[in-house]
Length: 135
Image 1 (cartoon, helix red, strand yellow):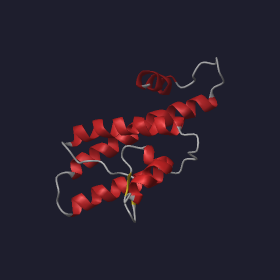
Image 2 (cartoon, one colour; image 1 turned 90 degrees about the horizontal axis):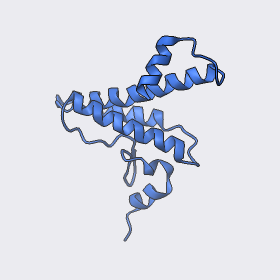
Image 3 (spheres, rainbow, N blue to C red; image 1 turned 120 degrees about the horizontal axis):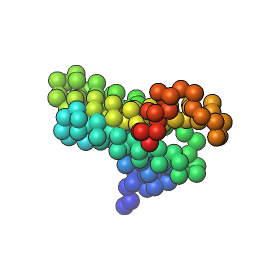
Image 4 (cartoon, one colour; image 1 turned 120 degrees about the vertical axis):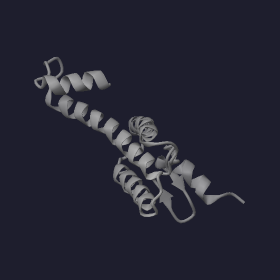
């Protein structure tokens, strides 16, 4: 008998994301192993943010709306670990920081691009330098 969670993973756009897990009655939008420490978590979060950005760019049927679900599950996972005194909460803190840092860089770029006409110089040199070096 086929597993309905597996078949759903392939039919729902968010199922393409490596950190989304479907079960019979639930979708976990932040199903990431808590391995290592804060720094390891940052690296993991950065890599997963890049996967998310690729997904947003390439998925034709994606209308967005996943970020709040991802953030809710990130913080839920971290809070559960903290409540039980689990040291793995540090890794999840790193994952959150890494993920959101990458998204923040792209949001800055998008905000600057939306106010600057093509060919015009960037008026905020600090922001321009940040986006040019983080791309």
